[in-house]
Image (tube, rainbow, N blue to C red; front, side, top):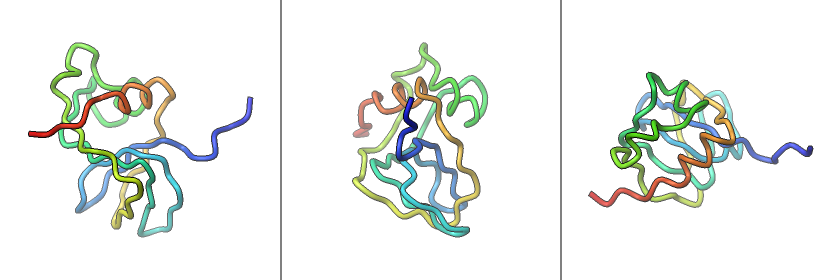
Length: 100
């Protein structure tokens, strides 16, 4: 099976919060994401690691708050890149945009 060109991942930044998207490129100080969403509130089993592997808790999907996806976003000061499992990516991408 051919590997996808871009990895869907959760990015934690020191000043920009937590984002999810496809990693287009990265340097020691910046990550460029495509289809990038800011994760305002998320419900996982425990940490962002679980969110990246298991996705959000199914009993709390309505409590997650994710911003509208931007076509491309450059994030400075990243401190974690957590690759998402295909299952987690599918659920994270399916969460509707928060508008309040």
